[in-house]
Amino acid sequence: MFGKQVLNDMISRSAENESDRRKFMKAAGVAGLGVVGAGAVATVAPSPAQAAGPSDSAILNFALNLEYLEAEFYQQAAFGRSLGPKLTSGKGQKGGVVGGREVSFATPAIRKYAREIAGDELSHVKLLRGALGSAKVARPKINIRGSFTAAARAAGLIGANQTFDPYANENNFLLAAFLFEDVGVTAYKGAAPLIDNKTFLDAAAGLLAVEAYHAGIVRTLLFQKGLEAQVQKLSNARDSLDGKKQLDQGISRKNGSQSNLVPTNPNGLTFSRTPAQVLNIVYLNPKSVGKGGFLPQGANGSINRS
Image (cartoon, rainbow, N blue to C red; front, side, top):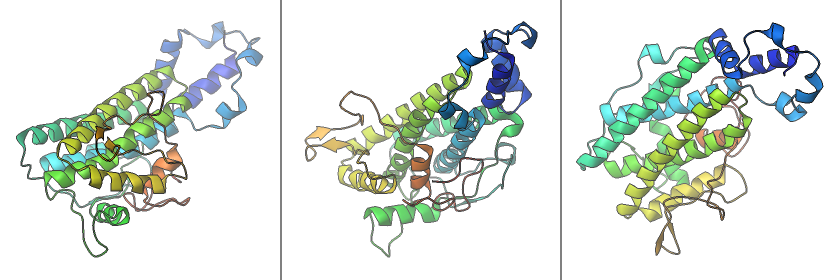
């Protein structure tokens, strides 16, 4: 049995609103604190590392920043619109979106894929906002137009005086989607061990699975289109931002003689990125900073520095 103070601490760590606290109590099978014995505190006390880690709500808000970014990118590409005011309010400084328009897809199937993914990302925003309740953060300022150009220049995908429009055609759209999707998979993989509440962990696992499906679709389409060289440049650029280890992988191996649609380690597992590594990519800066790139005023919430 949990000690009363430990259970209180766990509930406080797991959420920042009463609805989530009630869900936690129900999931834990505890009808009331009065039945909880106080003698077991020492046996279930969290480790110093756990106690010092971010709260579950902080992690979910970090994820919400990423979902805002993805949802805006796909809503624009698929439908030429942005998220409405009812889906962008919350704590922190609310920002607008620079750039974005509907893509003129040449392939009907890819248009359908884009619309499906846009629907998923919109659902993710709604899910996280609902789970966080009054603790949810607002959509931060997002720069789509300038950031993709900066990323493409840094990757050597375009020249120093050229611009990259992710909405110009379906190939550009897929390359831009690749930049986002792989990061989303590794972000959720890295965040999962930090989540205490099993209900939230289950949701995070579901989000990771959907992002992995999206990434698989995008990587497969890029391979079918023969864009391995362009993808490798973007992969190398991400690797240069998130630390010294060479983790990121393109969509082919052995000089293009083999596909690499599922980036894994020797054990067949995908790799993780820490929140700081993810923000290094989002901010387009390998240093420890609090804003830049796609989020020019930084992410909202307590996890906001790369």
